[in-house]
Image (cartoon, rainbow, N blue to C red):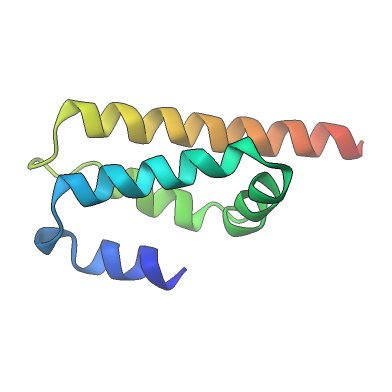
Length: 88
């Protein structure tokens, strides 16, 4: 969580390339069950996901970054829906 706090607080000093690499890393976590579990735990209350989405509102960032962010948000929301439906 500290990473996202740092990125969110210092977003004007971080290049888009670094942010894209972060998104790629998060996306790679979907490939393994332990990664999906980690994502579920991290994004359980929605605050961190909201921070990622708000970060994409920066006018300096490209539409590519915004698109990737929204696609990631959808995947995370779908993960929560799948995990929730498996338990009930």
